[in-house]
Structure formats: structure tokens, C-alpha cells
Amino acid sequence: MSDKLVLVHLTQEKDYAFKVAFEGGAPDLMVDEPPPLGSATGPSPVQLLTAAVGSCLSDSLLFALRKFKQKPEPLRCEVQADVGRNPEGRMRVLRMKAVLTLGVAGDRLEHLDRVLEQFEEFCTVTQSVRAGIEVTVEVYDAGGVRLK
Image 1: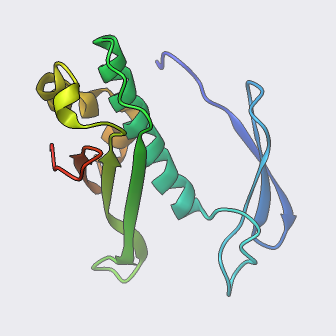
Image 2: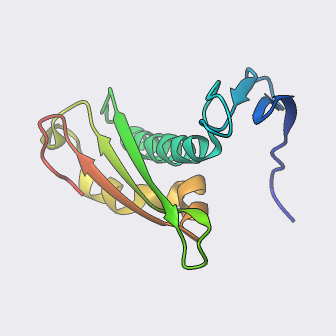
């Protein structure tokens, strides 16, 4: 039994474009496949998955740092999804790489080593995706120093 049920409604607007309505008051969103199937009137399913991983990792890192009263803002995150064919010839997300960048120098943040050790474990989306897709994570500070 789950602790929480998340519900979204998709309604076809035209061809591969769907309106997504979210329970709980979030604004509707249009999704669409890129050409030649769709018209790219909204993000594709792969883009949504990629954004979900990046958003969850960013939220987890920010939450972990704020638990120690640290101010790492503004955070940035770039996620790359490698899409290609699996051994059966089907298109799949083969792997993902997330690069998070803090808005400050790493040496200004207390407990950073502990945070970097743990924050990924609390990311619901990334840990779920990792069951089927390799996801690597790097973290840099504002000066470009690699922290993880």
C-alpha cells in the first residue's frame, strides 16, 4: 500500500499533444512529441522525465543544506538524458547525468561532506529511476570546483 497517491489526467488535444492536468492545483501543462511525430508544442515525455530527475535532485540538495541552516542559493542543475536503442532495438533512455552547481563557494558551507554523502538517497524520483536507468550525479561549487 502506498503512502500517497499522485494523480494526473491527460487529454489528447491534437495528434501527440496532450493537456496534462494535475491534482492539487498545479497549472495545466501541454506535452507533445518532437517532429516528425508531434509538433513540439510542449515538453516531450523524455524531457519531463529528465526535468523530474533534475528537480528532485536540486530539491534534495537544497533541503539537505537548509537542514544545517546553509544558504547555497542560487542552485543550478543541468541533466542530460542519453536516448538510444536497447539491445532489442527499442528507443530507451539509456543513462542520465546530472550536474548540480551551488551558488556559493563550497568552503562557505558547513557540513557539506555529510550533505553530499546523503542527499541523493532522499530523492524519490532519482532513486526510483535508478532501478532501471543509470543516473550519475556531479556537484560543483560556484567557482567550478568539483565537490562530488
